[in-house]
Length: 115
Image (cartoon, rainbow, N blue to C red; front, side):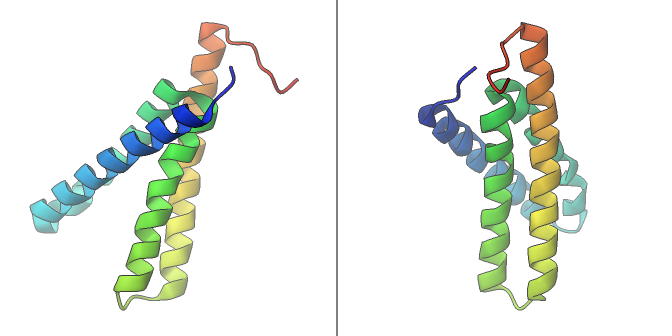
């Protein structure tokens, strides 16, 4: 299955809206905001299933990197820690979305164009 640019843009828009909603919800909760963290993984799994093994991981990783960059610029936190956690989080979410996207493509019988 070939992934076009429009699919990637739609996936990025969906991920940005979902990530912003999760961040705002966890900010509103306050001290219990850490309980919303598994929602990012659930979002990555849904993005992988809906958008496949190419657009799903891109959409899962890019908003996390953007949020880390905003935190890096706006906060007085340790830069190396923000970079490390941002990249590690983006990598884990992208890997989860990729795995679910590959499973979906295998179950649907989509031909693998990488061979």
